[in-house]
Length: 440
Image 1 (tube, rainbow, N blue to C red):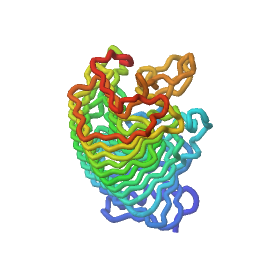
Image 2 (image 1 turned 90 degrees about the vertical axis):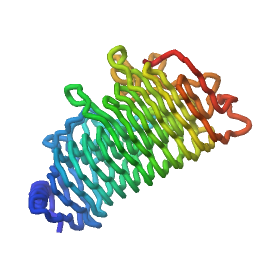
Image 3 (image 1 turned 135 degrees about the horizontal axis):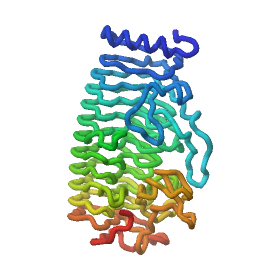
Image 4 (image 1 turned 90 degrees about the horizontal axis):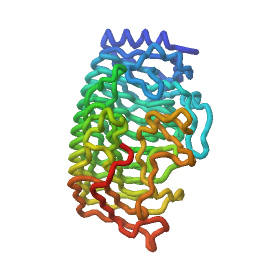
């Protein structure tokens, strides 16, 4: 039977005893209310099929679970493991997070809720090894849902995440400066990025590390932002990454690679991806693109963004309301990109944005004090326009490439309407070279 009221102390004691004794701890049927939980080495924790682990809605309840990487003014987690090994979390039960309690208002023109300034992440593993997360579901995260930081040998399989589609920063699975990670068979629906690889920085400014040998396969993602993503935090290198056999549904950007902070991104493969890319309001980065790859030196004059190179998109099909955008604005550039067997239907979206999105730029990183908007999200200029949304020269093509070196386009086809809608480029593929930097 679940304990009535707050069971944090009793549950933490049971977790600690189970880990030390090496026995399975199963949370039984019913609702269990909890505050901050620490996960020790050797924990085998199972959420029973009818179990609900519900977390309290006060940020202060999680301050003891300090996360090294601060995100959006938040550095606390509901569940936290640090320097642990051999953790296993599974079962068919549900983690119920207090997302609605961290909504303070709504911006109708941006299409988003206004989030509280400080919001806890649901599950953070930092500097952990040999971790398995499987079968359980998470609902209504107020912030990043599962955050892996500087971890090694992690498997995330058959995990389901269902978040509010209008709550910013509710990324599904964040793989941050980790090595040897497998994500398989997951089902994620969220407002922000679905599965995203990052390389964050520590409080002293040093990179957490590099992100290497990551595989994401057989997963289904719905995202109002970018479903399958690398970046934007790229303080360390990201390399040897594969996305296979994934379905992207009802998303804004389907696939994205974004270099901003000095780390290189290389040896990346996206293969057999089915996608739907739809326009969203300006509060979400992107504009209905099937694929976006771009580089911007947002730390102007101090540290150029790292080069993006050796990237393959193969057997990608579906529909998009925007275009495929490959834009090298930073000095390190983009090179050796191959698109093979791409078959995408391009349709005119209801918003008819016909723009490509270069956010985040230095405007988002440090907006002026009188700027309208929300830092690291969107900033409006004096004319009320969102900074970073750029009109295509001569109208929207299906594929737009700017200053990309050694671009290979083979067996690529676009199904476009006839006659073309107003604001579209008559050329399906537009390749421009030696373009000047604008945002770097």
